[in-house]
Amino acid sequence: MIASDTPLAERMRPRALEEYCGQKQLMGAGAPLRSLIESARIPSCILYGPPGVGKTTLVRLIAKHTGRSLLEINAVSAKVAELRDLVEDAKRLKALGGGVSALAFVDELYHFNSSQQNALLPSVEKGDLILIGTTTENPRYEINKTLLSRMVVFDLKPLAPYELMPLLRRALSDRERGLGSLEVAASDETLLFIAESAGGDARQSLTRLEVAASFVAALGGSALSEDIVTRAVGGASVRFDRKGDDHYSIISAMIKSIRGSDPDAAVYWLARLLAGGEDMRFICRRVMISAAEDIGLADPGAISVAASAAYAADMIGLPEARIILSEAVIYLASAPKSNSAYLAVDRADKDIQKGEIQPVPHHLKPDGSGYLYPHDDPRHWLPQAYMEDPKRYYYPGELGYERHIGERLKRLWRRFSQ
Image 1 (tube, rainbow, N blue to C red):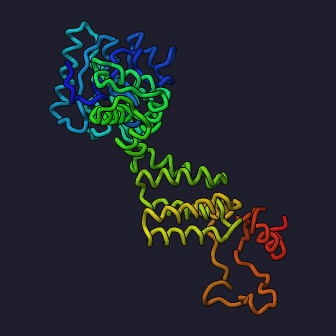
Image 2 (image 1 turned 90 degrees about the vertical axis):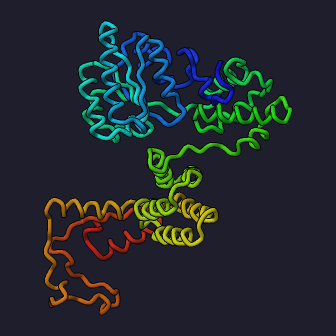
Image 3 (image 1 turned 60 degrees about the vertical axis):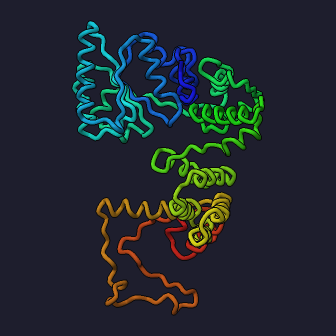
């Protein structure tokens, strides 16, 4: 009998492939990993995905379904001696099993340092063990290239609410492992509310269900509602890792929404960053860069808006700073767009990197002679060379204020009329 204080998420781990939720791209009928499991031909692999999407559960189901021995170790706490023991145990089990390799499960594999990862190489290469590592960090950056080249990476995704619903229904009614003995009922609408608030995390959804159901039972009630769930567990879980992929993915989504002139999407991604606890100064820096790179001279005031917002947000702090940042993000997303300034300096930089290093014309040097002072002319402009070999880098856009810039430059310089 499982102790009642064992978390529901642990008690409800699927015991068969048929109970496994989600990851259809890997575990659906005819999908790659499902086919490999059913044929018992498992390669050394890495299961990469956020917490609560079924990585550990999947490893244990693989061992059970294929009939292979399972050795487990956690890279966070494992010592070098434990790693050596794991390798030796795997070799022994292979010899005893007539050449059938054991599964060596290393949880959070990326926590192993380079030498520890390399220690696994010979065993993986010879097939003394089948290494299955799990990681919440991108293995393409965090795992040694030599080890990664001998493994397959399977990407696991956050679970959709509809994928969590069967798990929640089963947990609520199951009397052996679940919450059935509490005699608490819940409508599909309430279970969907829990699923939607879990951020794609099966463990979080079950934890929310367990706390809410226990809260109702403690009050002598028999039915869950959205209001009770909110009272018991608070607002939705926001999946965000300031140092991981979410950090880059969500800021990228915000910037691309600004560039694409979608203020609704841009402010949503801003809210996600703030709700996840992203460094506000990092957000401000990205907003200022976007103002110069994506709006540029189509609206020269955009950089002032972004810089003013950054200053004001830093002075005021959260939570009110979110209003200031929202104003800036909406302004930028709604503004006309031009990346001409970005492209101009990029072109100039490429010429410099190719070795096109022009000398400063004599009349432009501090001690030079022959310089014509533009303000001496009523037009505040005089024709003279500012490069020994004039090159065209800036191509004005046609939107917003930049159209006027282009028209003026056409009047001044022949190359802007070509």
